[in-house]
Length: 382
Ligand SMILES: Cc1ncc(COP(=O)(O)O)c(C=O)c1O
Image (cartoon, rainbow, N blue to C red; front, side):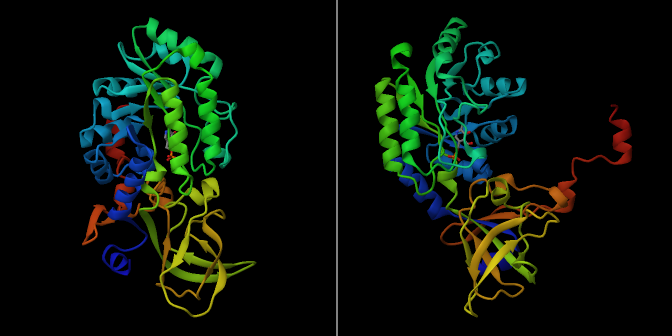
C-alpha cells in the first residue's frame, strides 16, 4: 500500500485481483446453474468489466452510459439486462440494438418497449427490510416495480403486445444482512405461481450484505425459481467488488474542537457512502504504535457532513501517515464526484505481482472539460 501511495499519490482506489476472483468464486459456489449479471453501478471501471465478462458474467445496466460501457467491452445479447424506473428513449434503443433483456418497472412501459422485446417484470413485494431507508427498494412506498396484484396484467399485456414475457424480477435493496428478508421476498413471489403459471426466468436481484448467509440466500432463490420451473438469474453488485477495494488516504493533520479530528485528503467527493447512507467502512492505520485514542476521520470539503468515519481508535496520527478505508470497491469510485472541482482519484489494481493503473487521476481540466469557452458558447447556437 505504501508503494502504491508513493507511485500513484493519494487519495487512491486500490483493488486486489485475488479478492475480486475470490468474491466471484463464492458467488459461483453458492449459486450453481445461475446466470450472474453484475450490477455495474457498483463499480463500472472498464477493466473490471472486462475481467468479469471474460469470467462469463453479464451486466445489469441502468443508464445509457452504462449500456455504452457494456458495448465498449463487447457485452451484448444474453449478457445484458437494461433496467431502471424511468428509462429514456435512448436507453430503449441502445438496449434493443444490443439485444438486451429489459426489466419492466411499471405498466406503461409495455407500450414503450421496442417491438419484440424480451422482458422481465419487476415485482415490488411490499416488504420492509433490514437496511438503510435509502437502500431499501422493495417497500410498498418505494418507487420500484409493480405491485403483486398488477403482475398478471403486466405479463398478459407484454404477451398481447408481441413481447416475450420471460418472467419476474425482484430486488429488495442493498447491503441487506438478514437472509430472512430474501426468504420473505421470494415467498411473496411464490404466491404468484397460481396466477402466472410456469415461467422461464426468475431474476432474484442482488443486495447481499458482505456478511450475509450467501448459501442460505442461494438455497431460497433456487427454491423460488424451481417453484416456477424457471432458470435463476442474479444481479449482485456490491458483493462482487466491495471487499476487493480500498480507499487509500493520507493524513493532512489533526484538529481538536468538541471532538478530535484526523484530517485526511479524501472525503465525500471520493467516498460518499458514509454521508449518503451512514455507511461504516473499516478504517485501518498503516502506521505503527504511538498510543491509541479515538478520532473522527474528516475530509477536506467545506461541508460539516464530510466525515469518512466516526470514533475510530487509532495510534497518534502525523501528517503523511496512511489510512486504508476498507470495503470501498463498491459505490466508492462509482459515486466519486467533481464537486469542489476535486479531481477523481486514480484507480489501481494489484495483480499479485505488479500494480496496474486502471484509471489515471483526473486533472482540473478533466473536471471542466465539458464547459465551453465564451467563443464556443457563442457558436453553440442555443
Ligand atoms: C435492480 C438492481 N439489481 C442489483 C443491484 C445491486 O445491488 P447490490 O450492489 O447491493 O448487490 C441494484 C442496486 O441498486 C439494483 O437496483
